Image (tube, rainbow, N blue to C red; front, side):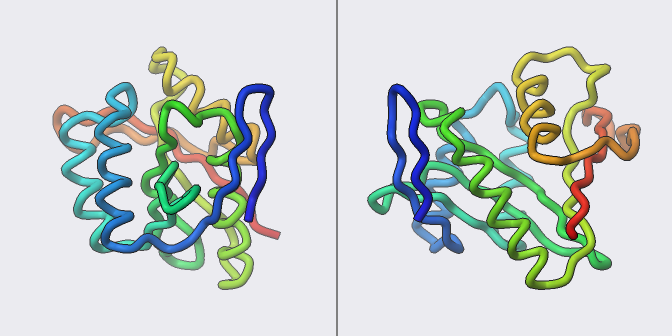
Length: 162
């Protein structure tokens, strides 16, 4: 149980692997976050939710946030993460990342990696996203040119696991 206090809200939540019902709620959250996820992203996310691991943060059986991940060659890959707009900046995303760090340690992974839009792409929602990752110990390790038409260039961020 994680408790996060804010002047406006207190969130009591539990983080757990997603059920099929939770996956539907997570997709609804993703679709509501239009500043972060376009149609192509939603389409890919639906596949990733089926094929990879999905965690959800829940309060009273209601999904507040999600984090999709997989592993590859000794590292954890954070694929997708989203927090409902009305509960952003209350520590829910941090709690999900902290859970992933614990899971990474348990599995003896050496790092967590995530891709996001680069600083060179000036767009406020992703400025907040990068700030979140940097604040949570991620470091930029390289710039990745888009390989598919209509996709954006990405930066790869990494958090070392001790």
